[in-house]
Image (tube, rainbow, N blue to C red; front, side, top):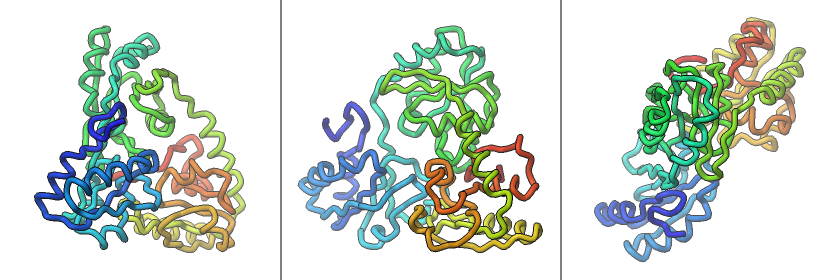
Length: 335
């Protein structure tokens, strides 16, 4: 698979080479999400041969634009971050260049396949940054089949209309529609939209050709079980991320005050990479996660004590009704 516009994603090697040559950069950093790391050495070789620059590839996990490798940034003249669009929180250095790795896959076949599964008339289109440039094509397919297409605009953390993040579904909340069609792979994004909007969501995967209705009931059962295990908790560890795009210290302080109001003990824990092993030494009855919202969902059952989201913590304390349970998000306004 070539490193230009490949069958999967465009890593923009010519653009990268031009930027390096224009700036005269000598040491250059590459940061990839997990699914693209294997392309790092091949791209680095191509760029080094074309520019004479030394490439350093980040080996640490990368969970999004919120998770910039600040240690690598200090070692290089410029850093190319792949797979994500720039966030408001990450506009702190002119040394960072975001390569969104747009997909070249044809989305029309899977959208056409999804038409027969859609029940509503007005369809909200949502996707990740990899396919956001293909939304006009998806709209054209829906319109040709008698549907009305809407593409909403989210808050300032979202770079494009129709874009959703694993921690922000505000684009969907701002759409007036009967149901949603998500174009992309994986379940987390469409499940988040289903829980956030309480509307039907179809997921159309342009790589596999699969069309399915997402069912949030399993996630709700898991989250209800975590809440139930935490109802008798007296001591809480409130996790705060040190990552630029995830740090919610103000929220953490407010949650600690809320715990005190209800006669509970709470401690703030500042941490960069949150893993089950990192939390083994903290003897608390339950954790509350203000870092990446996906942590509590993706790692459910693996932490040494139950891991609650801020909204679930409010349910445990009786400040929120069970029926108002939603996935945690990092947005302009509290969820």
